[in-house]
Image (cartoon, helix red, strand yellow):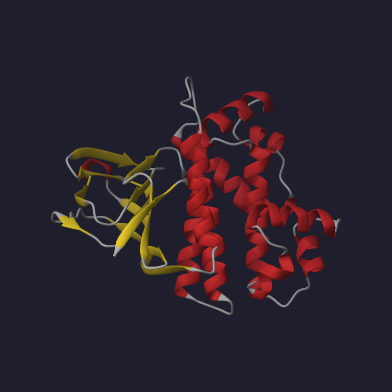
Amino acid sequence: MTSRRLTPKEWLQALRSEDACLEIQRWGYNQYRSAWDTERRTLDEDLMWLIVHGGFEGTVAKERVRFESGSVFWLSGGVEHDLRMVRSLLPCAVYHLRFILSQSGQRLRYKQDLVIIKDALVARPYFDEIVREMSFPGEFHRDRVRAILALMHSTVFTLQSRPVQRGRTFSGAQRQKVIRLIEENIEKRISPSQLAAGIGLTRDYFTLLFHRTFGMAPREWILRERVRRAAQRLTRTSESVTDVAAHFGYQDIFLFSRQFKKVFGCSPRAYRRGE
């Protein structure tokens, strides 16, 4: 099969296209307390990991690589590699996906064989959702997987395009606490000011560090997480769109629909129907 390289925009268009075939071969979230490594190998599928704890090192083609907690690792299929855990960083926890994207008899590949992005824990909710959806498929499974994967990759591309930041960013402990505060309070419409207070910073300084760390403003990330959680509720309950919106603090159904479409590219009703 021949292959075609895609830009970020083309990749997202392909993920949403009815003509493209998406096959997720393996998925999961694993925790390891003892080290393991791979033999030199070449996979047909793309390999995508999010490292929650620990770290890995090895070679990709002839390049030495190392990536640790908070990093996204994306390797195109067909590239020779070997990887092993960094023993000094055990235990290790990682989300992992193997997938193939093809269209019209061509294997679709991202323009870069290897992508490593640090400080990428903002993508964790999408990895978590993909693993959950693949493990417990429901109605309109195929369409939800494509929508979540497109959202995951759009986040990765946003992180990849952020300028190199100079100066301080959040510490590992601060990153984890901010993520936890948002996840625990997403239905209460937590504000950037409350998040800043939660880790003992002024709002302005918090906003600066958040953008340096995650590549986007706090409000944008909170919005994405709230809409993602609303999408879960739409597909797992029989509640009306209005009731789901109200559950997440929306008094204006039109605002909810507009923000939902901004994130997922379709209306809440279309998402629930798998359109």
